[in-house]
Length: 263
Image (cartoon, rainbow, N blue to C red; front, side):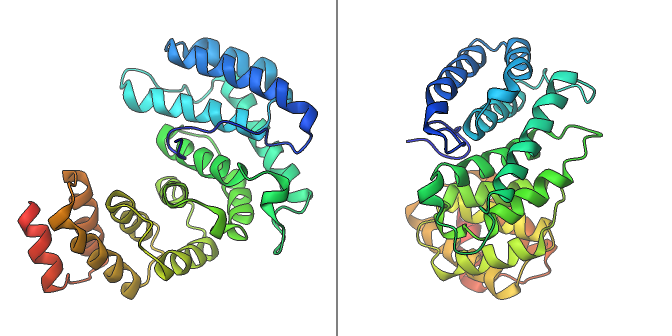
């Protein structure tokens, strides 16, 4: 089962079904290069094939680059890498195409177009947040992602939505309308979100300075209520308590008790 952070695959982002065999081939080459740890070949191939890449291909390339940078602290993208500039430009072009075709209009049924798109938007946002390429103007891309995501929030899986907001917060793209709609959607039912998702959401909302005190407190209570029966990582506890402290929200007694028991 693949998630937003684990990568995108499957249907081509372009609705033209004849593009699928080519998209599948491109994904295969990207994944093979990534599996070898050969980011230079991946970038060379992506730059050469950029015009043929579907949304899934673009998000897969971004995911592989970001995952490698995260796992191998010795490697990072050079801000002036012309190959990445081509990839970055193609991502913007693809998202502009989606907006121009009406995918950001309220009432658009994404399932009839391509159900993989929310995963792609989330993956790209997460990847930019992870890569942190200095000197790169990605605000137009995040504006497009925000427009596209806003009207399709119910189609995002919990991890995809978490990664989407984390990416926006990480690159300091505080889309108030997106965060307001997303937090309202999340607050309607916290059950599908894992403990890791919940702590990350608190971090993202507070970091972006787009949070409602009542919702942050609710997320914190839901997180703490699961602690007796769940294994959590120290970073999850840290993210939660940092978010509450930064937002100047005093944790309720039951939250302090449960979190304290895990510390």
